[in-house]
Image (cartoon, rainbow, N blue to C red; front, side, top):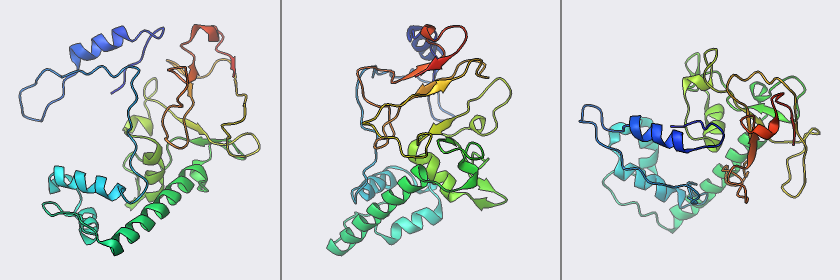
Length: 246
């Protein structure tokens, strides 16, 4: 759930959320939400990238009913010792296998995201810098009954949630995402270097445009002295013409 600020003032957004947002189980009586102020606090929301990742998967399997998962996935997990109601205690042999699997999986995911070669990922012919944030054309990551595995993996390695409005947003609503992973020459962005990006005037965005800088290790906001590591057309310093050179 997101709320958009006006003039960087979060108070109206927070007030609106508290007055109207409710979260409860289907069929139960709505309850007041326990709101926790997390402003200016750091949270680690990253999954492990070594063999302890499978410990996290096991926790989820133990906490959730089997009906929350797919039989095929639950079967694969059971084959490596992760099964609801049973202890997950891999021996030395299995620990070695899981460690290698985690290393290969992490490397594969980073390659799919940062060096993807699929044609539907490129934002335009000949582009060396920009890619579409969402590839595949289906928020369910399916096409003609075929699962778009790489598109799904790519998206969820750097993002959290998905909605139909991200795929084909109605006119005047929804959101569109573009990712810049390389410079104009196609070289990977380097945190030790300085880059310039030019935003032309009259960007065709009804509400706003926004450029946010992320850390490629955490896929989270770059941690700097600025709580908002980026620039947006909402910022009055951009000017009414909507032009920016960063």
